[in-house]
Every structure is written in C-alpha cells, then in structure tokens.
Image 1 (cartoon, rainbow, N blue to C red):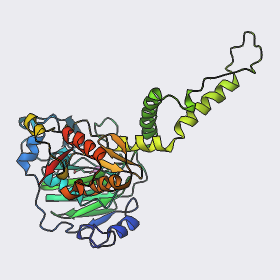
Image 2 (image 1 turned 60 degrees about the vertical axis):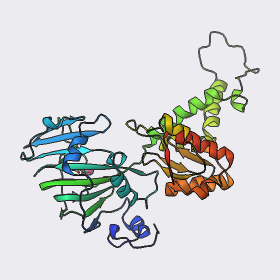
Image 3 (image 1 turned 90 degrees about the vertical axis):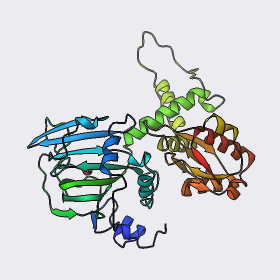
Image 4 (image 1 turned 90 degrees about the horizontal axis):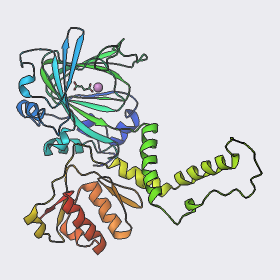
Length: 381
Ligand code: SIN
Ligand code: CO
C-alpha cells in the first residue's frame, strides 16, 4: 500500500490525504468504497457465531423508548424472529474467526497496526440499531448488506440517558443524515455522535481502532514494571536506604523527608528506563485478546518440522516491532542486523519466503521453531 496512491476505499483520497484531513478530525462519507459489496459472512453463519463461547456478542432490542441488552453467547432460538422489527445483534472481533473478514481489515493498514483493533459485524431487522451514542474511538462504518440510515452530529453535550442498559445520548442533535447502501462507508472520528437505523434487514461492518487511556496504560505498564523489578538484581535499584546523618528523634512518628526522597527516586529511576517501557508497551499491545487460542501443530506434524520453509503468520497473531525489539503475542525479543530486518518484514507483510527464512541466524531459526510450536505461524511451500 502506497501512502500517496488514491484509494477507492477512501473515496479517491490517498492514505496520506485521508490521515491529514479526516483522521481524528472530521467525518467522511464514501459512496461505493467497496463496489459490488457482498457480505463476507451470510446471515445464518453470523447468527450461528452467537452461540460460541469464543465470540463476544450482544443482542439489543428496542421497544419504543425501552431498550434491553443481552450479552452472548446467545442461542439462536432465543433471538426474536426475523420478522420482528427493531432488534440487532453485534458480533465483535469477527476478523479472528474469518479469513475473508481478516483480509478486509488489512485494507485499513494505512493506520499503524498498533491502533487497529477489530472488525465488528452487526445484523439488524428493520428499525434495529443501538441508539444515538458516541464512541471514544475512530470508526469506519461499512454497509455490507441492505440499507442503514445514519444521523450524525458534533455533539457538545455528552450526557447519557439514565436507567438504560446502553450508552444512549440524552439529547442527540443530528446535523446530517445519510442513507448507506451496500459498499458505502462512513468514517467518524472519536466523540462524534451517531445513530444508525436499519432500513429493512441490514448488516454493517465496523472497523474499530483502539487508543489507550493514559491511566489504563500507566497501570498496565507499572504492573509489568513491578514484575520485572522483582526479578531484577545487580542494578542500582538494589540500593538499600541508608541514613547515617539521621539525628536522634524521640517519639517521632513523622516519615523522614530523606525516606520520602529515597522512595521518589526509586520510582523515578524505575520508570526512567525507556527500553524497559518500550518492551512492556510492545508486549501489552500484542497481548492476544482473552478469547484467542492458537492451534499448535499436532503430534505427527511436530515430527515434520523442517527449516527453512515459507512462513505465514497466523491471522490471530499480533506482531509489532520497534528499532530494538520484535513483539509477538505478548512477548518481546531483542533483534538486530539481518534478523531484525527479516522479522520486521514478517511483521509488516505477515509472510516470509523460504529463501528469506533460510538467511535467518540459527538463534532466530530456533525462535521461529518455538513460535511455530505455539501455532503463531504456519509453514508454506
Ligand atoms: C451498528 O452497527 O449498529 C453500530 C455501530 C456503531 O454505531 O458504532
Ligand atoms: Co458507534
């Protein structure tokens, strides 16, 4: 994908133009972003997915002003009939379960992988939707089947309705309205209020992004840091508090200022290791979602290990890198030189040829074997 090449997916804008003009800034309606769009998963297969423990899903039913929410797994028989209007089901992370959906998500890789989250599919009967709301993240709403009417507005008041099991805006003030047909797509930046109502039966694909909250990220990194520190010895962090200049203190319950300074310095010293923080960040960003299970090779296949071979990353694997590390599925590895270049290529392109694989060092080849045994990649002829 080239940064400056106009894309039909972005209504003729190049990724560079889109990022500059719209990303995190203003909505974009793209008619026929995907011409001849057909759903990648049919209705029956999507509704079957609701029964799985491994799939995150919700059923939302509207009855006038009243909303009900049921979290999955959901038995197909427990769903309202297809003739009943005003209900919708939302299936999260469908890219983890379908190669075709995963391939569609790859078209949005003009945004860094670290920000790309998942593809959610909603199915709704006539009038169905999740009500007027806003999301904290950027979203592309791609119409896959049937029609959906979107009303959107820059909302100033974000107050939510009380006593409702969903986040529904109290005072939604739409400014524009669009009827989307299959293949049409609407991009919305974070915090832009929207309400999509199915016009007849419809399916919408939401390409969602993730952006960590400062406090959440800090708490995740600090937890990782605490683990690292408990295993670390032989550094300046081993220093023990000393107070040879402490004056006599009689019945003094006040914490010594020197001890407070020591505590402050210990914490700042611990967080001032950018390499450690970068490592923990990469591990956090590639941590598989809780419902992801890899399929390791079976007993017979393990005996067939042959290196070098073509490498194809499993579609559930998350692989990122920085200038010193490679991160895969919640783990980090230091890499440099040719190994780093090739593993970075694997992260970017999700595949390596057998010829490229053959030039990895023996240490990297051992690592590749360990990852193969985890089911993180599959061999290709
Ligand atoms: C939907 O597909 O019904 C909801 C998507 C959204 O509003 O974010
Ligand atoms: Co939304």
